[in-house]
Image (cartoon, rainbow, N blue to C red; front, side, top):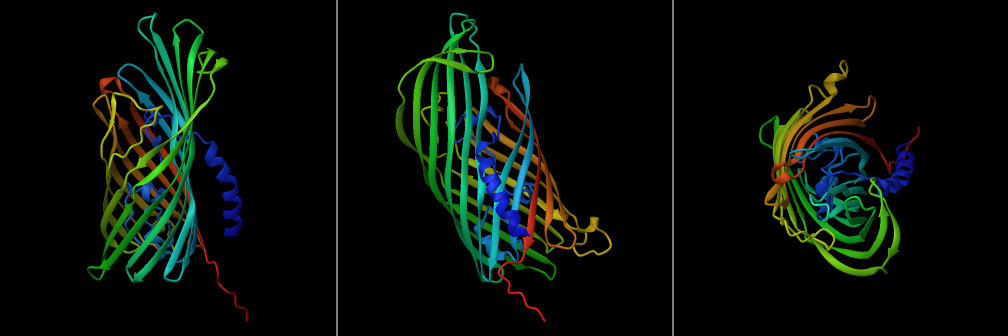
Length: 416
């Protein structure tokens, strides 16, 4: 049954992922857009902490975790996001429903492998800058698209408690942006349209280690390193004159020939380390830290004089609690209760203001009776950006849900 679910879902969502507009953040104007992927629902509900060698949940942050799967696992997750955007004088609200990931993990003795699709980043904004003087040009900016990742990874258990792994990601996507200059009150403007095709490959290597420190307590640790990689950007640009309306639409009257050129964007290396302590199948408390250099993500369409980039850093603290994972009399005692906190320096600086992101998370893991499968729910409240220097602050609430379906594959059936 799980095989049929995987095949039909993969076929459907491989098309859906390209069409979704996953953000309305004005900060998605920069770089490769707003990075939406924060881990699986289970990991995200713990603030991003992913240090345990789980046997029935896929860990997409460290490929070494594939070696610890005991059952073939199909995971799919999605989110509903509600955001209030505000400046010092104005505010607006947005809502989005998105696919977060689609993955399969398969155990093969000491080995395990995983593959899937992650809609990694999104571009989605509409910004209007109205000139105070009617004789000066006003500007409208509009953008859509994003970057997706298809991945394949393998993990290997060297000895009990110690595993290593590596995976490869093929990155691909399209971004379309436009800027329209016009004089207020005159329904004719000049538009610059950019269409960007992105492609490239990057690699991760990881290690996970756990050991007993007392009869009940276990120490967990995780280390992951992402190599620096290059995204090839094929850019197509044209300039046109057209009639405009209040919905950011333009009817083209005259246009120039397309200009096509290529440039390279640099995705910097990243290192992530996490550690935790807990009682197996009972509770866990952990912390995780990641850092990466600024990289080189500015392109011709998003390079601005008042914008710079710095090192990105993320701090996470979180864990889970299970009252009694094998209780036969109480379903609520088998529920996994999760919580966490995270603080992230996104690496983006606008008008000398660092754009930071902070969030508080909660989650529930609901076991499906009679199986090792489960449904997971997550909730996150957070704030990104600031209203200083007339910038935009985003106050958001995310509700996420995922399925983790588990079954045995490659098992020879015996009948008496």
